[in-house]
Length: 277
Image (cartoon, rainbow, N blue to C red):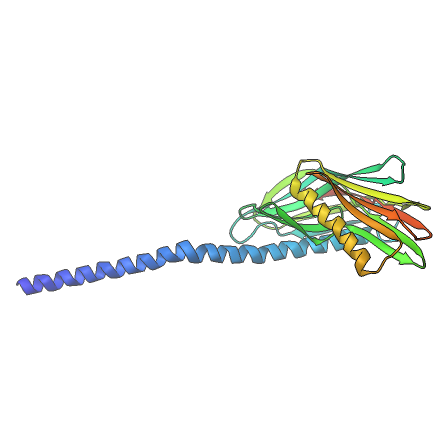
């Protein structure tokens, strides 16, 4: 009788141990496997959101192409803010920064910079559209996916600086478990204003919300212009990037030996709305 009881006890103990092993495997998967799976899914979703904003940039740029001077044209895009694991949100903020353009010693021309961006998952990743460029911000560290539009070209012996800054109107914060449709309407096509016989162009960006990451983003953009000058062998001007404060940087383009330095700026205006709002 004792042997039968011992045999039954062994089976019970073995069954409990099997359950413990299964529980340990499930626990390890919950601790290690699930978070890794979520990270992979969020990273894949971040690529989708980035591609959506790149498509948005192309569509908005096409609304104000050279020769297109008619108002009322619009584009509608679906921004997939929500991911498979969490709802997302789309934000439109006016006046996140100020861009100042000073020609020689003349008073600067200033324009307000707005930002359309999406957050998802833990909201530690933000992807958005600002001043005609697309950026990605992870835990406060941001980089341009494609920068704003500032070109530096040498034609003959002359240097041409062309800047396009979309001005966006709108203010909203919308959460969704699906994609968010966004309408962008061209309300004021911009005719370029130009300056010639220039000695110096100073472009300054200040983050109005005291966002150091945003100022650093523009600093990287300004440094890219200097790299563009070297890469394209644009001689006749010097370029200097200066840190003014922790939230403001400037780009100085100074004429050296180029016969003429020209500057052209275009500022198309758009209104951004969530469809149906």
